[in-house]
Image: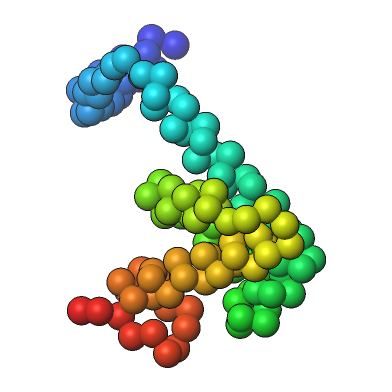
Length: 129
């Protein structure tokens, strides 16, 4: 038993010596940060619910965008893109045209991301270099 303890102790000592030392980062999280994260998640969830609607999926297919791809893209939108979409949604009128308006805003975001080279969805949009 003692024969195994010595190599084990040496091995553990070596592992502890080469283990990187990680420092902990702590800080205060403000209420505004928490509210902003919550608002972004609510916007993302409402967009996902909108994309689950049958009329929205038909409109996306008419524009040449796969509904699955659109759901995946909405899930990966940055905070600034979500804020831009949320601002566009807030400006829409209540009623039947809101679905078309939101889809149009999403389509425009896709075109912008194609133009900056982040995606390659539409062949008619050439990225700016």
